[in-house]
Image 1 (cartoon, one colour):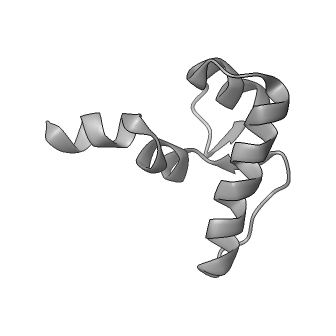
Image 2: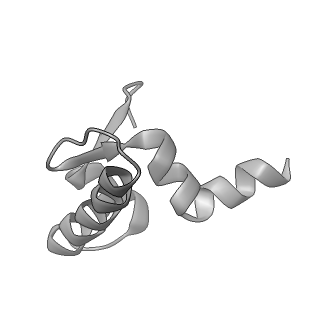
Length: 64
């Protein structure tokens, strides 16, 4: 992943090993959660930090 604040659908699909269409559903779900918390979202991208927290990657980092 690049050093940016957002992760694209293609990167989500690659990181999770899922199809691009399923990755879109994941990104939409995460963006909906962020919208409900009052954050501005970008279609087709999700905040990288939030993605890491909501997937298994966040759990690994918190254990350290």
